[in-house]
Length: 375
Ligand code: GMT
Picture 1: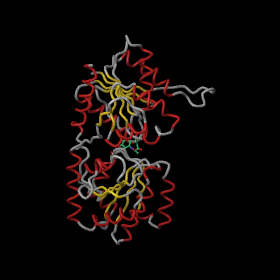
Picture 2: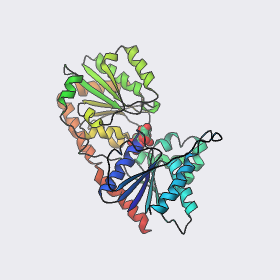
Picture 3: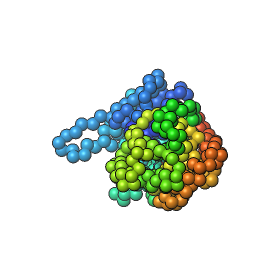
Picture 4: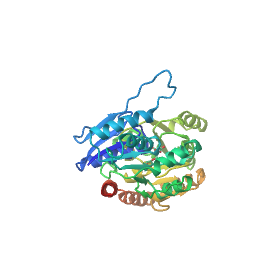
């Protein structure tokens, strides 16, 4: 199959899922064309079946906001036609599904029978999509897609609740490469960071408000207050970072918190982690938690969105009410002071991650593509 994948290239769950899906498809012999305004972060190696098409667009003085969605539609017309795409899979409803629809219209029914699959990731529905000014476009673009998937039952239900959707939405979850994301021997790294055997807590995000990184710092502070010696590694960067740095200064714990910034080899950091914290205010799936679980790291999360479909309370970690940093802190302490419990939960977390193994989920997408091509 010749498959076009439209995605956001930056750090963030939807881009990671789209890139890893494309790589998985390419390794099965499909030709994959990634389409975006910049090279996707995780597209870091040459593969004979993978091409990248950069969507370029010019800035004119008249365009205060250059129309990316139109530039994308024009590129799609060209790529569908000349690369002879069989399938177009867009990640994120706006503007990707909208541009795909426009491209199909431009090519016309007779020239273009390519099915379009739209995968909903979350912020397109729960945050961006619920801005009423986008509602008609999101609704229209989803309904005009040939196949629609959502990354959790929660997201599927939310989409039906918030928009007037007439299409079936299939749930296909996030997935994980179990070979890449597994605990590996990094004792030298752990020793360098924690010379006195301190525990390591990790948080990975894009530091947007929705990630509640300040809650992470509060939970960590409660761990320190219990007397447990520990370090917090904060991975990623984004708008809330200055606020979080201020919080660490106010609590006087800067020497225990490391801001590592954006990192490629997350699995190396997770390999030395004792606990993963994800107290998000909204999370349609929680890919960062799945990566941690795959590296045998217990997870403490909020009980919102799709997180309860991944993290099982008392088994792979603990779930608490949104913002209840006291309860999250208590659960963190209970795990960190009991080696046996930590080990048990760590093993369960890895077993749970196996349910979301890459090939199992890529099979689901391929089955959807084949169904649409047969129609
Ligand atoms: O988490 C983010 O802010 C990035 C965002 C995105 O759209 O790139 O991630 C969303 O999609 C991921 C992949 O499907 C999910 O694992 C994340 O839970 C989801 N983030 C939110 O819902 C906040």
